[in-house]
Picture (cartoon, rainbow, N blue to C red):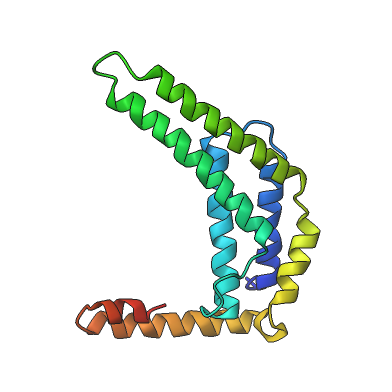
Amino acid sequence: MKPRQPKDIIKKELAIIDKLTGKKKIDNELLHKLRTTYKKLRALVRMQLGMGNAKVLPAFLNKLYKTAGNIRDLLLHVEYIKEATREKNSYPKAYIKTIKKEAAKHKKKLKAHFKDFDKKGLSKEILDALPKEATGTKDLLRWQRQQYVAIKKLAVKAHTDKTIHDIR
């Protein structure tokens, strides 16, 4: 089996985000999938550029990720409140209503971001930001070997903050 090229992986992850942005209903599952796909994409691009580059993805994707995170936090908070007050058969309805209103505002923002999503443009922007020599499978394998060696070194050392962060 031939290893996939990093540029193909980037295009695949953007295609997943594109598919998610086409959905009508914004629920916890969609938000979770959107955020994990973003994280995979960010990790791959960081790996290709090196860890010194903190802002590796276009600002638009970062806004999408943060807005989805805000909604997810609010929805999880509502679930937590309901769970925590279930035994009392009463939960703070006004408070939950306020949280849901706030989540609705963020959902509108997210839907506006969905409309602006341009898979081809983002793909080109990300690939153009990568150095040409960093888009090949050899670089990916080299990085994996470096990580393997770092983990091996870490396994035999005493665990300190410094040694734990050496793997990065």
